[in-house]
Each structure stands twice: as C-alpha cells, then as structure tokens.
Length: 272
Image (tube, rainbow, N blue to C red; front, side, top):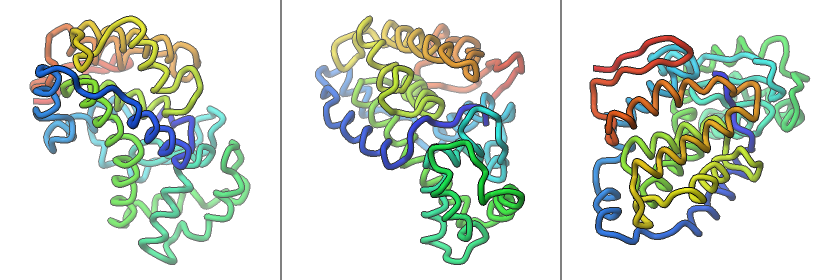
C-alpha cells in the first residue's frame, strides 16, 4: 500500500467522535431518503469499495491477498502493512497487534509489542528487524489476525466514513470518496486530513443534508482531495480521483452500480 494514515488510532477515534458529534443533522427529506437508502456498508457495495481501494493501493482487485503485505515504502512512517496500510510509525499497527494479542495470546507478533511501542511516531525498525516482516506473513495465515485487520479497518476508517457520508446526505459514491480519503490522509488536525478536506469542500458547496446538490458538492470534495494529495510527493499521483472517482461522478453513478470501469496509475480495472 502506498498511503498510510497520519494519526494514531487512539487519536483518530477521539477526533472522529468529536467530528461526528458536531456534524450537521439531516435537514431535508431528500437527504433523509439518501441516508435510508443502500449505503457503502451494504455487503455488495462494501466489496466494491475494498476492490477500488486495493486497485489504487496494490494495483490489484484481490484485496484479500493483502493481509500478508508488508514493506517500508520510505515515507517516514516505518513499516506499512496489511489491507489498509497499518503503519509502525503512526500507531494503528500497534493497536492492531494489541487487539490481535488480546484475542490470540502468544501469537507470533506478540513479542514485538514492546518494540512497536518504542518506534511509534518514528520510522525506526529498532527491535523489529530482521524477522518482523517474516512473522507478519506468518500471522496473516491466521484467520484471527485477518479478522483483527478487518475490525480495525472498519472501526477506524470504514464505519466513520460511512457515518459521516450518511450524515451529509451522500449516497454510495460520496461515502466511498470519504472512505478513500480517510484511508490515505487519516483524520487528524493537519491541513490535508480528511476533516480539513471536507472543510475545504464545505467552503465551496453544500452537501445534500444542507440543501445542496450532491454532484456539485462531490466535485468540490474531490477538488479539495486533489489539492491535499498534491501537498505531499507520495500522494501526488491523483489518478485514483481523476480516472476513477471522477469517472463515476461524471457518469452520474452515485450508487456505484456495476459494471464499473476505471484506471489507476494507467492500469485498467473492471468489475462486472
């Protein structure tokens, strides 16, 4: 994966909770209808979301093959690993391994917890090399570790994105745009975080929950997302927006109905 989050899960959960608590309530019948409709958390739509993110992060639709993924991509966040880019330097990898260990004491990663605590906030591999990547791959053969990755992904990234999208009156595509942004940028206080991307969009357009036009608002959100991506070299290729999410938006496919055709980094993808 290319783009780990910027904020530890503990901080992220606190910030997201505050954000959702202060978010505007649905204020129109149209927004309420959208909120009650099928969302990104519908199992079939969620599977599409996982494939879309994997196409951008791993150049593959096989997102379930990424539980074992791990490497240091040289972005200053240490090891990046798993289905959503958990990072040794940003706290969410530590929290994942803590959850896994609570569920499966004595697992192959449990002995690395002291090292993960030491390197949190840095790009250091101290106490992790040389065997941590090997042992991560071993852990990824355990269904309990896969489930822990799923649960952390949902609690920290997916569920907050869907909830905020519903609160804003957005349909499936908009909820996915939020999810993809949180995956890449996290939801901290820095200018390129999800909450500040959304804030930039709100300065230009209103979401359906505030009586605005959904397409207009999503264009504003994607404009803000592209701006945020270009602030950091590691994120500067904006094709996951330009030749994927924009394609669906221009087609008026606000519910991400299949078939879907898109490109990321020049590679073509299709879902029937």
